[in-house]
Amino acid sequence: MIQDILIWPNKVLDNPATPVVEIDDEIQALADDLIDTCELIGGVGLAAPQIGVPLQVFVIDIGRATGTGEKYETFINPVQVQARGAVKMSEGCLSLPGIRAKVDRYEEFGIEYTTLEGTRENISSDGVLGQALQHEMDHVNGKVLVEKMSRIKRPGVRQKMKILKRRMKAAGLTYHDVIRMPEE
Image (cartoon, rainbow, N blue to C red):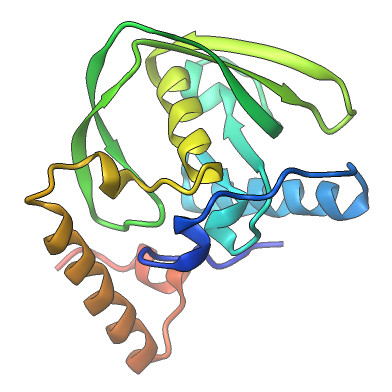
């Protein structure tokens, strides 16, 4: 089911998520909701805190990130196991609509995580997939892209998002209504 995406600032986005204790039907439904929502918006990845669920779960469209025919992967209770090199990358965030920034990322990044089937796996990558892994890990750790921006830009982004949320509320719009609107 399609879920509304939280726009920062929001307490759920700013706090570390809780580990998943048991992979059950609720976690499977959460993964399905994340995939459905991410697919509708056209994002590369989406974390549970971004839809208001403070659990350590995120999904990434592996095919979109790598240019292959692979499907979405669900990452549960991820732990960083590798970080190498440094690179500046242009990045956006579904919780910061309309905002892009050049940020520092690791050139190659790896995590260990639990799959929906309950097995522990490892994944390591560079490029867009490596960037997506880092970005979604930030979300489950209570970090938002704005924290990687220069201190000078942060207050302006906060103000833009607060204005956007006020306008949305006044007009009775959801995130998905706004994201489909042409830019002014």
